[in-house]
Amino acid sequence: MANPADPQGVRGSAWAALALLTGLTATAHAQEQGLPLWELGVFAGGLSSPAYPASTERSTRALVLPTFIYRGEVFRSDRGGVGARLLRTEDTELDLGFAASLPASSQDIPARQGMTDLGTLIEFGPRLKGTLARPSAGSRLRYELPLRTVLEINNGVRTQGFALEPEIRYEVRDVGAGWRMSTSASLVLGDSRLNQYFYGVPADLATAQRPAYTAQAGLITTRLTVNASRSLGPDVRVFAFVRAESYAGSANTASPLYQQSTGTSAGLGLNWTLDRSAAKAAN
Image (tube, rainbow, N blue to C red):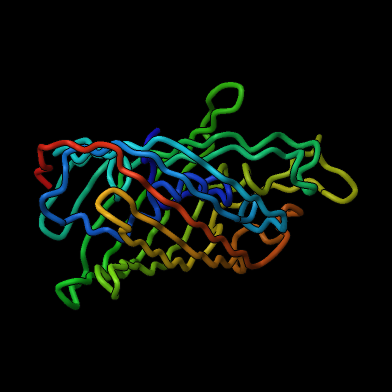
């Protein structure tokens, strides 16, 4: 998946690696005119993040991947994510959004030793996006309401529940020296099946240090994220993000896999555009 998914996702390091490909580009405004219909490039980046929400273990990843942006009237793979646009007005958009995440090995997480690995997750579902206000010509206040089915790929494909991730974002087009920035606050909520995937401990995998636990539906994490990006030329753009997460008040603080109440993530990436279409997107 090139320039794949949405910045949102339910995993820690698992979603964050792919978030570098598109989550950091969310500072660009979708309403810009005159953008190419498609762009082909290469992305390189690195990040550090908790292994999963409320884990004390961290994961550091470096990636070099091809990227493809397509700004079609219906199907789009752009700076806002991958999806099929169903409805669009000046201030509101409804689409089918997609997100993806990388796997995590339980062998590398002491609290999950002997448990099943966390597989690759594919998330898809309807997403309502809209503009609440435009304080100035170069800024806007946005919201997103995505509801996604979560599928795990791990020796087969299986459903792992649903995730709801409401977000409020403030975007600024130019904060000086060509920088664009956005600040967002969001919640990640999961049904009982998704929370069981992260925090449940089956009886046959329980130990003296890790008692059996059945997870409950509800809050997974609260996030505050700052994204920044800047063009270094017509073909090169640099991105960075810092994210603080609070797991306090989540639905499964009693789980033996819940290990801390706060977490942080940070990443840096660079995208180099190799080719672009002469044709322009219709927006």
